[in-house]
Length: 253
Image 1: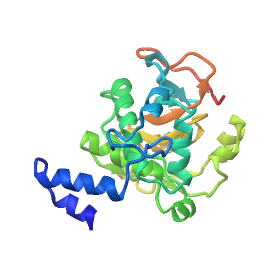
Image 2: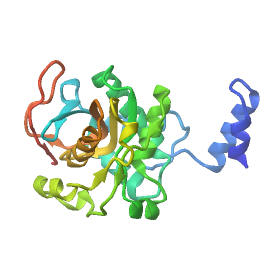
Image 3: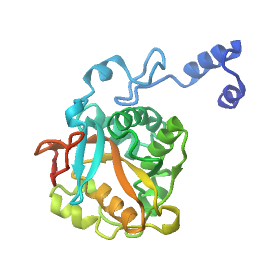
């Protein structure tokens, strides 16, 4: 009831402040990363986490993934407190965190991939995982990012094989095999000739993003670039602006 009331209010209306107060009273704001209560909602991140976010420096924010390879804009290292925040988003039933996390994806993609895409899509989870969680976290991230750019997040890919969770595999070769032929593009005509930004939550080895990007290109997409909230430590120099990407691996700590 309170949320419906808020939706009906206009910016600048006195009731907006009242509604905001009521929302904080009944639904105290929590940090998107650590989950701790905050005095005010602010930007959705508590001061402690804001100071501890493992941001990638500009020269490390654009990484090559896969054998092609594809440039991938990554906002953070997959370390605390980002790791805990992503885990809560994926497994803790906290879909609201996607809205906060998407801001970082938008900023990093804008800085690293500006002018290289005109459509947004995402890495889908399997129907089984979507049913268990009640949502697809990558879709939520893509939708929030798309709203920031004024473009819809399109469902272009389908997971056609239910495989083991990538997080349960540590070897890059196993991860690559685990997602081989796991994704398909049901409607190639919708992707033909278009430039896509492909979004996922985490790029550890890049195997999942690469498999999806390969599927999009095979279906006729003109090009694919990628973005993720977090990624593992890399073993070689990054894919810098103006340089040809080399085949590299991401390594988790």
